[in-house]
Image (tube, rainbow, N blue to C red; front, side, top):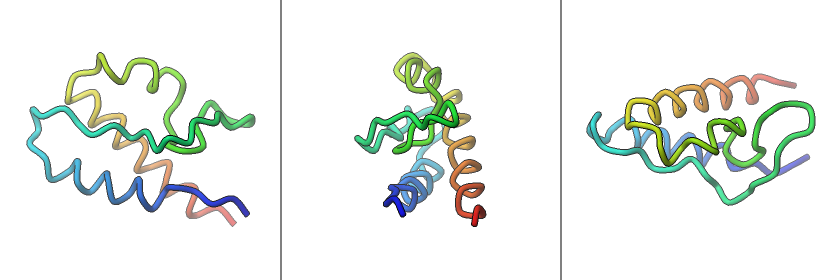
Length: 81
């Protein structure tokens, strides 16, 4: 069984939700930069390559959208057997 940083991602997402809407969001990067071979998804932060590549140029609104997708991905991974 792999150890994942997804609980830490959930905590960071909670902090992002409490931040002002116009403020840039904290990066989801967990310094575990390994792309899963079966999906276009980083094992550490659950972002796609496109989301990782564009993070620094995304507006705060776009960053929040990425965070919302990450939150959904975390939930789907916890539901897997």
